[in-house]
Figure (cartoon, helix red, strand yellow):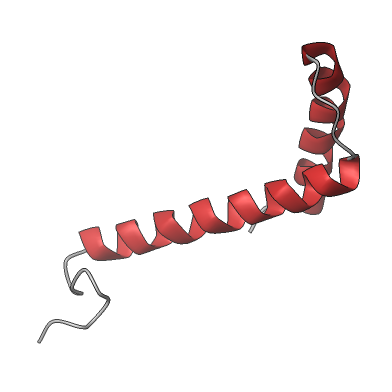
Length: 64
């Protein structure tokens, strides 16, 4: 969904900024967390856009 380079750049920025805020996180854990968040948010966005199109119900069944 997102490019690996973009995700890597976000991780690099967060790894540099978070310790200044007093948060210690390893880059591997942060990468896994960001991938999970992006996947969940992306899935929700896709579902909402598809529902707004009007040809499916909230549960995803096609309207006849």
